[in-house]
Length: 278
Image 1: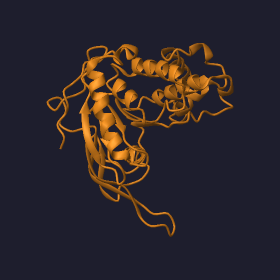
Image 2: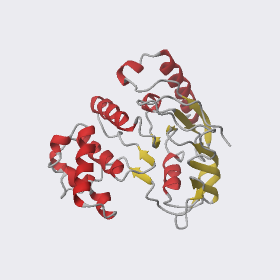
Image 3: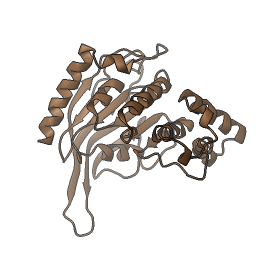
Image 4: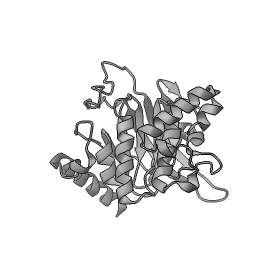
């Protein structure tokens, strides 16, 4: 089993739990292999022999070539399907289906066009029977934190793509999951908007003690945001390497791009992903 990595201080002094604080990882994949078959098509092995431990309070990014199984790992952790071989557990319990403790945000915002921004954020809380006044207060708090509180009564069609993604982030966080799964959440944004939303998301996340598992094709984004960056091999995907990002928090993303530590980790990861692509 992987040992907990060195803790990185968060905004309020919180540190991800280490082995002495927590005896088991919050997310644990043991010798996981996934095979897919569609009709009469040949069997496809998506991921093979993945052994991965993620500790409470960590921000872990996963990168690798297209089709290597990054999203498959998120789907396994979310309980959307079971591994062919091996097991996936959350806080020591085998994952057998979706859980309220795990939130999942996809690349597309998926907002309901007939609901305002605030009412979109409230959706998950409605399913959980949270009282109306509490839902409203929580939604407004998150929209304010993501700097779009003044658009709470706007409909998705009236919002830019960046604003829609902020609403989708708020909707995911509103139900207060212990683990945040995020699959290319900023991939459709232009560069300037992407940097802004990244910064705002980190301000919300840093200091919460929540675990974030973040899939991206953008190596710079992975290093800028994460405590650890996992590089997956080409299909069938396995964890090729696990890089610790030794950059303090809170992070000033514009400045970090020129930090020698950032440049060194980014270059090493880029070379590995390039090797897998070719």
